[in-house]
Length: 358
Image (cartoon, rainbow, N blue to C red; front, side, top):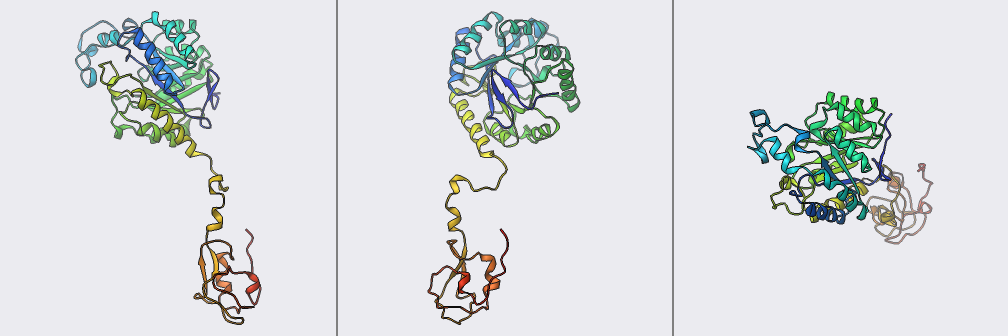
């Protein structure tokens, strides 16, 4: 049985809580520990809730082979072998302790995507508070099982997966005893064209599963992420870079610090705007009902004169009789002289109104 919310370092994550925004550092450190540490500082300063890294080496994620199936054919990394790309993009394992310590100094959660069992062992030794399964690993049931067995919250991206594969991954977590799970709707295009986002899938996932759903966003802007909040997303993950033009491996579809800070502010506001379903008068509306429409005397009326559509009208403000009573008023006789601009009162009528219960 999965919990309706998950908790990372004490931060509750779910539909009733503020969106949980994750800055994905990936390989944008360009092989520099100093830059990776600076990225943690800069990401924390944007106000995001967590920072994510990736724990693999080229040797643990692929083979050093140059046959066609190991060669990237299109997109940002066309012509490179998988091994060459991951050799550049990986976060060296000897950096991890320093990265976790820098996040702690910034009072921000840091967790990782492990890509094999040895990565989980390393991360467990560092008390990693949660695990993220990347889209390309959603079919690695052994990896998912091992991550779930740690008892830590698990976030799984669904890019490239069929519904049946998503359900199999969810079942694997449950079978391993995991009870804190979130799924991120994801399109694994780098970058993702806005028209490919299919954010209604996120709504469908919210209906299918009783745990947090979010978005891993690879578009170039923030529109999809903000829209996702309105559709029920509890988590937003997006790639982070210090400089989109610095040539780092994922910089082309990452957000720079100022844009990330704006993203965090906007998704928080989108969540606030959702509020709750209700029809009570809000504080900002206080006094507004006084300026709705009601019935007023629009021409001076003599005692015994009939009320007509010319001398009684529905106007603002709302200090007269309710507009629903106009049909009962028309044709009645005035009980007294009534000045122009007076709010209509039942005492002005020759016979009482049949009133409705409000």
